[in-house]
Image (cartoon, rainbow, N blue to C red; front, side):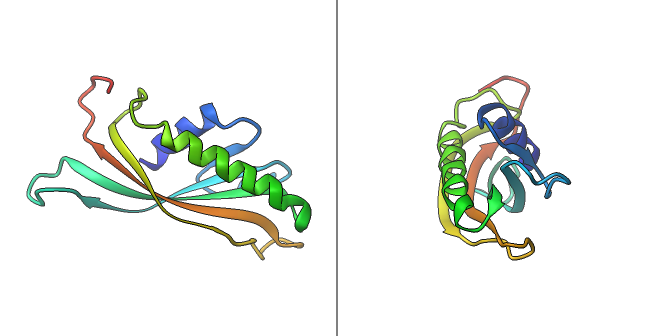
Length: 133
């Protein structure tokens, strides 16, 4: 699911790169997509429908107060894109996206700290059978 979300966001979020890790060049805004976990939904004996817990770190291109608005705008773009994910043609039958948390937490590994909004999403999806949803 992590790769599906990265590929999808890379096509719909303009002005930012999307990756599974911090890019070498951090001069432009980026979204880091990390799959935190997966759990089976419904009958535990049937491994078909899952809830994928995905964390999306939305980074500004620069730190300090100047980057806060950029990070927030990127967070809003990512959230809006994920709301529209169900029903798109991707390699899974995605039925629903739910959000559990969003917080502003600058990344102090950068100097000055890089502005970042963290969005937690749960993506509910069934197994892909080769037929687009």
